[in-house]
Structures are given as structure tokens and as C-alpha cells.
Length: 297
Image 1 (cartoon, rainbow, N blue to C red):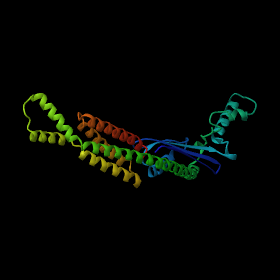
Image 2: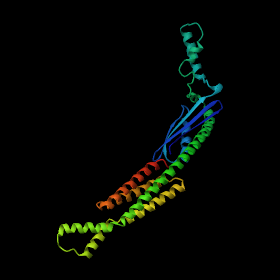
Image 3: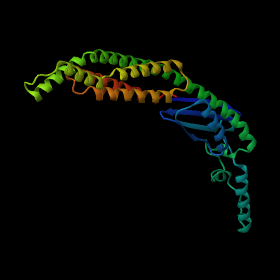
Image 4: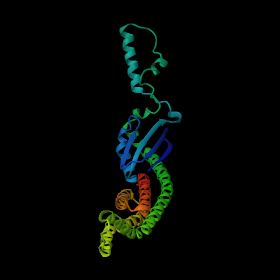
């Protein structure tokens, strides 16, 4: 969703510029800055952007300045009012001399400031100008979309690499987990000997208890669900479209499985420590993916 685009257009004596700056945001958040006198264009600009963009904090800056021979705009009605008042004062106080035109031009509002000339337009002129603003906006949106597509391609490649790493870590955990049952049995036997001393231990009962302990710590279901989520995530990258919220959901589920892996591998000696390290690596990759999907619609 991040990006910047700008479009410029000159038409009918006006120089138009529309700039769009987008940064990460969970929803579409539009902030518009329009010249004085063109506030009526805001609803249409918002409609266009909502139709084309889905997420992001987007700053929209529209600038309209006189161009060429029309660069100087005089508020003739205001100037005429100043002159009438000057004539009245001249008669009232029996003054002589003519008004100073240079001084008149310096009076507030007589000459429109750059960027504010649109405030002097009539309704018909604003309607014509709206068409050109719409064309300029369309150019800017197209350029923003092009930039976002280029960024999206690079982002997709990076996310795929992270999925590969998660899959590799999960495969290592699977291999390590197959060796945990003997570890549970040895740990349980050692603990029972500490408690019972020389009392004989029934091998069958020991095997049964070790199996139950191993079952409570079995991670096969979590690894299977994690693998499924990773596969779905990869398919969403390939599919395109509006997938940002789907990514959020899958990452939430992936994080849940990683947390469960960590809770089930405590205290299984060397293999357990290795599984814990790998699960932490998976969590780290998921967090990085979570940051990246904030850029995706």
C-alpha cells in the first residue's frame, strides 16, 4: 500500500497537480487537501479513490494555479467596491486626485494569491475544472497502482522465502519429535528411581506412562495445521486480489500453532531445546510476515 504518485495537467489556462502519498494502514483512510473554492469536488474524489484503493493512509493534495496569460487573477467586483468607497470618501472630504491603481492592487483580496485563484470561479467554471481535476486524478491513481504492483511483486518474493524457511523449520521439528518418546521414557524412569529407590519398576507400566506423557506433548497436529496454513498462504500470494485480511487471519492461526509447539516442548532435554529454538524461529518469521502484510490490500 505504500507509494507516491503525482500527475500534472494544463488546460483552459489552469495548471493542475494531483499528488497521492500512501502508507500502511489497516483500512482506507483518506485525507484531502483542496484549494479554496473547490471543496465541492471532494465527494467525487473520495468516490474514485474508494473504488480503486482498499487499504492505506492516503494523503491527497490537489493544487490548481492559473497558467500562462491567466496567471494573474483580479477580483474585479472587490476592486470596484474599493473604488466606489474611495469616490465616496473623496466627495465627503472634498479631496482631489485620482485613486492609485498600484495601491489598489495591493489591497487585500484584489489580486488572488497563487493557488487561491480557484476561489474566484463561478459555478460553471468550477464544473469545467472538475473534469480536468478528474483526469489528473486518474493519471495519479494509475501511477500509484503501478508503483504498488512493483512493490507487491518484490514483497511476494520475500514472503515466499519466509514460507520456505517456516516449512524447513517445521520439517526439522517433525524429525526431532519422532525421537522424543525414548527421551520421555528415560526421563520418567530416572525420576521414578529417584522417588522409589530400589523398588522394582514394572516395564509395561513405565512404557504406558511414557506413552501418555509423549502423547500430551505430541506436536503432530500442530505441525499438520501449520503446514496447511503455510500452503494456503502461498496460494493467496499467487491468487492476488483483496487478500490482506485473509493473510491476517492465517498469520493469527500460524502464530497459535507456534505458541502451542513451544508449550509442548519444555523440558525434553537436548531435542526439546532444539525444537524450542526452531519454534522461536517460526514465530520470528510469522512476525515478519505480519509486518509485511500490512502493505497488502
